[in-house]
Amino acid sequence: MEEEARLAIEQALKSGAQYAEARVQRDLAHTFTLKNGTAEPIMTTRKLGIGIRVIVDGSMGFASTNSLESAKIRSSSETAVSTAKAAARLVSTPIRLAPEKSFEDKWEVRMKIDLQEVSIEEKFEALHSIEKALTPELVGVSLPSRILLLDEELTWKFYANSEGSRIRGFVPRISLYFILTAEEKGKGTVQRTLHEAQTRGWEAVKDWNPPVLAAKEAKMLGKILREGVSPPRGEIDLVLGPEVTGIICHESCGHPQEADRILGREGAQAGESYIKRNMLGHRVGSEHVTIIDDPTLPNSYGFYKYDDEGVKARPRILIENGIITDLLHNRETASEFNVSSNASSRASAYDREPLVRMGNTYMKPEDHELNELLEDVKHGVYMKSFMEWNIDDRRYNQRYVGLEAYMVQDGMVGAPVRNPILEITTPALYGSVDAVGKEMEFSGATCGKGDPMQGAPVWTGGPPIRVRKIHLGG
Image (tube, rainbow, N blue to C red; front, side):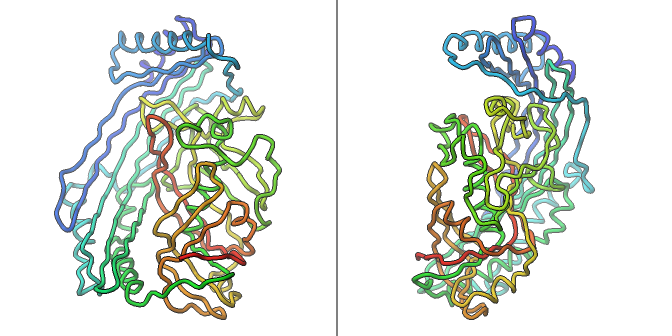
């Protein structure tokens, strides 16, 4: 990998680039699927190639190739340079990169049980063990549709640039994704989607105990169908579980605080942002709301030590005590805001240009037990998980439909509530938070962005939180 990257950079500089970088990336992935107990063919993905990015006269060019032959690498470097030169005539504001320290490093995430040493039979058996735990006799509800997926991905990267960085990295990722649809005569249907995911080896699957996890969720679906009541009307208090807290932080904080979105560069693709350039220091929530994006969390699905511009990763405090304190930056947006990059540049494969992305976004915990959050609710709802969510392209108006939810009366958790709907603006939601729990939980997710679309592995999560004086729909 190192020789190919060196050749790409040398050729780009020789062809007229003032800056050049090369990323050699190899991805090996498998998806094992069980649909209603029947195994599907294994889906295998193998990718190996080099992506080359250059700056010429304030314009950026990108090219890639899946051939690592010297002639093809030289040709791709020349293509990147010629693309940048052609675009330079149209650039009104020259592209600049914020200065960053160069690194020479080698890092990897170690697996206790190597994913490549676990047999195909054992991987399918993990799915069959879930299937066996989901019979109506065991879970007490009919599940006419059961889709179980086990994904594994191994990624090797070598990154180099003309400023002296040389970084080699390896990341294994494993995830379990299932969709269960429950049916009860006269009560309709309800569906549960759950995504467990980590940067680890096969030991993660053993720790999750998938049969127990799936059976618990299935029993919950049956209870909702049989006992679920309509959500309360009027003004109530709401306690949100970590799963709901996590999706809120990802969608209404992480995305609108991507600097490229604020600059309008995602407007035709992923959308815009309600946040403007001058809103650093602006209050959008109560003093209890601190939201962090941290790609360095051990075992996290969005883990990385360096981003795809060679910048060392670190936690990014996006909102602190209700005030916007930082944005997600790559080197280009950091230069425009006159700050340093905070290592938010990620690409999904060798043939994709790095974009500003999240890693693991969550709300900072405080010191309350869940029972303490609930006991101070006179009349409200505990929304533990969600079934669906929607948010506008400015990340301002949003809607979350609860799945596992319960009535709360005088601090006591009561009957299941079916389909409670939270519709609210971002500042109103964050401004209504009056207490935050201390128990952290995370869920896996694949965050989409870009054109062509890039799916980035991330974690969403946090503690349970309490919001006051909310109007529910449903």
